[in-house]
Image 1: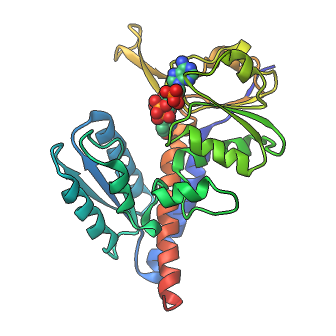
Image 2: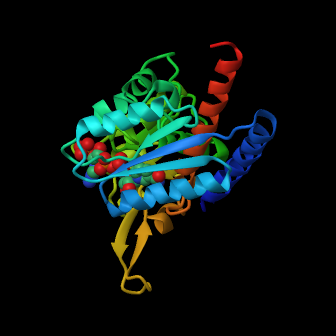
Length: 298
Ligand code: NDP
């Protein structure tokens, strides 16, 4: 079997086109554009790069972006005050606090300062709490997990009654993905560093999500023939053959697994583009909701 390759860049570009149309319509008919504030603390190069990519994408779809870069040694109060100020700014519809924050800061308290209706990353404790409960809808779903589900839908995966295995239990990927799968009536197993006999557990999966941060860990004999496999992993490995001396790979051994799976995402080019598209989508939605709220006299 050769897997259908799920092209995340293609799906994300369709979503971005729809967002661009909607923001133009908003500007034309309502006289404003959605605004996203990014809060970056410190100079972690990866975080700086992620924030830059998000700001560039905003520009391309007609979302205004407002960048706030604070020094590494910033205090808790300073950051929370900034986030609260942005929460009261009518030009700003979404607030993204780039994680991880430097170790001396209380991440949860900062996220708590983001008003729920501007929590476009979906990491506010209340939104995460609602995601983790039955029949309680969060205002926003975290972007990477939402992208995973969208790619499975695009590939035609059936969720109802499926055996799903999620490799990884982080707050930003593994756990929210597991909740989204449960809400779609899959039977979900979540694996982590203490799971025994990982290959055998993974082999049970009709839907396998890899989010561990271990390059090429998932091999062909970990995958049930005909499974849908989503590779969230994004790992830099040394590669003396490449010009830069390194390349990016996922958690799944793509060349092996494509011979077994029914459908598979590449990495890069799978979940990554969906994460930013999801953020843009949530920002547009935040702006639309605020406008509806104003028009209803709220
Ligand atoms: P974390 O490091 O926060 O979590 C990794 C999880 O994998 C943990 O639950 C850990 O277990 C588990 N794990 C680690 N090693 C093993 C192992 N050998 N066997 C079994 N389980 C293991 O990572 P993230 O969730 O933040 O990210 C995962 C991957 O996804 C990374 O490559 C990251 O770069 C990528 N990523 C990609 C995004 C995108 O937009 N494409 C967005 C976010 C992340 P334990 O809990 O026991 O420690």
